[in-house]
Image 1: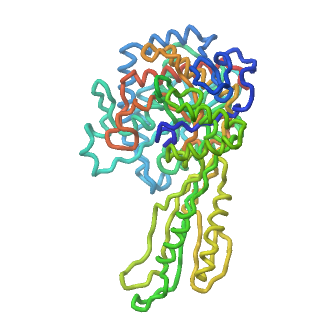
Image 2: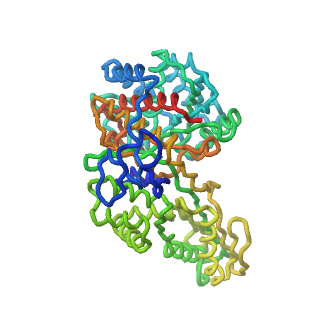
Image 3: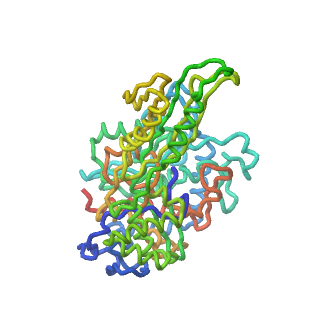
Amino acid sequence: MYSLVIISLVLYTFCDSAFFPICYLPRFWLAGHCNGLAELLSPGVNSTTCPQWTALHPTKYRGLSEDLNVAYNSEDFKQRAIQALGDAVRVPTESYDDNGLVGEDSRWDTFAELHRVLEASFPRIYESLNVTKVNTYGLVFHWQGSTPAKPYILAAHQDVVPVEEQTVEEWKHDPYSGYYDGTWIWGRGTCDDKGDLIRQLLAIDSLLKQGFSPARTLILSYGFDEESKGIEGAGHLARYLEETYGRDSFALLLDEGDLYTDMGGIVFATPSISEKGYLDVKITVSTLGGHSSVPPSHTSIGLLSRFIAAVEDNPHQASLSRRGTPFATTQCLAAYDPAYPKDLRKLARKAVADDAALKVLQERLLASDPLYKAMLGTTQAVDLIEGGVKVNALPERASAVVNHRIAEHSSVAELQQHMIDLLTPLATKYDLALVAFGSNMTRGGAGQVVLSDFLGTALEPSPVTPTGYGPWALLQGSIKAAFESSPTRNSSKVVVVPSLSIVSDTQFYWNLTKHIFRFSPSFDTDRFNGEHTVNEGKPFRADSLNEGVRFYTKFILNVDESDLP
């Protein structure tokens, strides 16, 4: 899953408490005193526009947590973690955009081998938890709690992006070797997303070994086609969980997502609480064919080019709203980022209540980084085009596909209406009938232009997860506790900032809980060459695997002893 945060160091955040006096909340672990002045704050000082909770260490399970902290620092545990991830990486669980249904396409069969590897690596989990396979290769691990409290979900995905054959020689080590060179574990999936999956299982196995029995039921949900459509994996898993537990039956869900980023000595953790929407609009122009020696004024390809030009000449307008993610992102950066320009810091604080300052702030942000355009509005990109079959034959049909990532404040319907309003005058000008998303809009005698949802993948922007006291505070506190208890990181200079990302498997889980987080407990520098690319690798610099297990352990124990419903 790609994140707008990971693509650049700009942090896309949302803070729904930005305009409330957070310093007066009766929560004893709200970090430090409250400060709303236009000055740089240290992580220990709380901000009215980017509220922070302190590190949350387990209390009921304090001894267990401390014992596991020691265990995770051992060489034996490190080697076991290396082995478990390497074994999983050695199974090439590639998913393809053109995969057929499970049971009909043999390319899915490799997931059966991964299941055998997981069971061999974690026999204690398979013996202690109830394991259900959904649509053959989706995995659900059910760890029954002793109380009727709402269960919660940890999610990950088993599949990886295919390795292009022509790039294999460019890899330092075989892309499915799982080779450990003393610093890095090499192979496709180490970063995305077998690293998260293995770290979750290592944490649970360690808790089982210590005799831990949860009060709150925990569900592990592992899809197998996140890198393509997600329908066969998470789509079926979400339906199974809703049928089994009911709508809005989970306290929270944590899936893969954004990372840690060190910015000027301050560590920013950026869990995503929202995702942009999605729509691929196909524009198809149909006209009469014939011999090219007697052409009309405009062929279907020529007409299509005019429609494409109209789309590109009229991009969606950026909008910086006080209720939106980008505005709160700016407030968080202005409050805590040491590198943030002083004049922008003052402007951001003034924009909380001053409309003129808000307008200037929008202009300054858009001028400072092209990615703010993606933050503040719907993006569009003409990615596919086809038309014509022979050089001397008039093309009877030409088409293009425009990819859209829909802004958090917008919708599929608003985007469709934008396309209709934009292209109707052109259809009329060239005497083309316009059919838009199944409805006849105009008549014409020279041909037809059709706007459609290419492949039927339209997706609304996700619901925005609340960021007040509750699940968000637990996540914040667990992240900070993992840092404070780490012998290698041992830092309290951590700011947790909610972020905005693009489409992931969580799109299928919206009915299960209002509290969906997307976060992977790794630094952006914990990846040798990024994800989905040649030489994908997960490092052991800063003991990345161990530290991820430490975080998941803190999170599980904190949620288990929490007062969440």
